[in-house]
Amino acid sequence: MSEQLQIFASLDFPGRSTLMIWEIASRLGVTVRHLLNQIDDGALVVLDLKTPTSSRRCARVPIECYRAYIAKQLTGPVEVRAAFLRTLPPTEKRALIRELEASLKPSAHVV
Image (tube, rainbow, N blue to C red):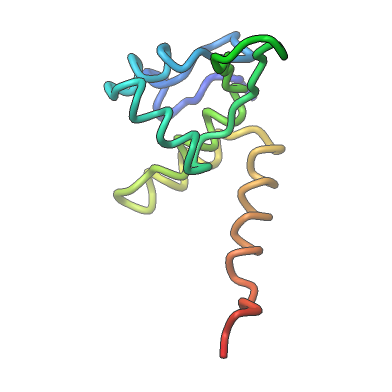
């Protein structure tokens, strides 16, 4: 299977393993601030490669995390979403399944 997203090829970065926040913002047409908020909220997972002496974040987004983020943002016809999900690598599919299963478990906080 190709590494490139087949349904939304215009959103993918073929041949890349990590991405910079500004690249994603540009590709998605959002601000860097919006993505930084998404990172702070846990919606977008990044590697923070800053050095111990640096005060600035040096975020790189693994391509798998970027693709998972895109998959979580999908809305629209079920057929389009299903076709997109079929193009994801098996590791991403398993991660999404685990997340869905966890969200279906009864909460310990239910009274």
